[in-house]
Image (tube, rainbow, N blue to C red; front, side, top):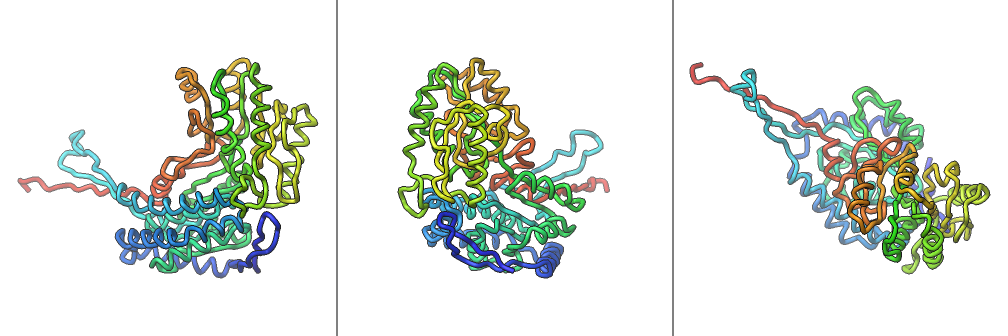
Length: 464
């Protein structure tokens, strides 16, 4: 069996990638388990550091090729694909840095008489075989965030990329091997969903890293073997509170990037914006006029700002959701229609009903909804009402309002005067409620993929 990789913009086939069957996965899991059990065969920290540094150097030499590959398989505009390639290289560097910054610590023992005469300290060991499943929207950097920490922590890892975008994953695994990582320590494992589920739920899997659909992630969690640890990263419907009187042009420029970057195919993309009712009409019109100026088209064109959705079925779905919101009473300010089988116009909708899908679910498309409010606490209540929570934002010139929103908005992070999709690769990144489990970010993932082991020394007394 094989998967055919298509260019999301024109749907032309660009590659064929053979799928791995269960027999091969079973062999690789056995191999990974044996590697982990052979403690004397573990890769030394200095070896891992050298491999990751060489991998980063190779990636720097091939940065433009990696960016073009992101464009071709994922449909991300070239300007953003170059940023992703740069971030992926930095993420590998961060793995090395985390090895330098990490380690154990001393545990005080003589706090009571029972512990007197003892010394205790901790150190970190790899947790065991890691199985990772990734998403399509950042086909290189997401892979690095899952595979890089596993390699750095000393864990053998099997990685299944999204079948729409396996090429960047294949390239990164190949670069690691080229940099000196023995093949058995990292396996490129594109496979069917049935095989992937077997791999994830196998008792030899010590840690499962998943980035993708909440429905699939939570389902797989329910089937894990006892003892398998997990990290889930899903999406949300990110809320933004706009305070009265803020400088509108800067807010709109930020929302455009946060809402229409990669055509909204980002787990923390701006989706729900709450604006004072007295300013709603002018704010929405200004946002709509700015959205209409965005360049939509071929992602390989350096001028393109919004490219295609990953599949034609996603264009159909976004169109249905938008039509439903308008039919239910939402006001269309701009966009609202497909431009082709693969492109959807940047869309702004005012006051869609709270029951509409665009108000309730992650749209994962180029759509921003704007709601008017008279009471900021009611806006915050509406922002918090969904079973999803990830990153949120507030725009305000008033310290009291910014602090109030930081304290009141449900989310793992609240951005002040910035959009919800802001992220650097060393910060914690965590979905709450149905949006995820555990904390992402290079150093945090490395902690997840290792255990803190303690040694307690009972020193003999001088008399003995």
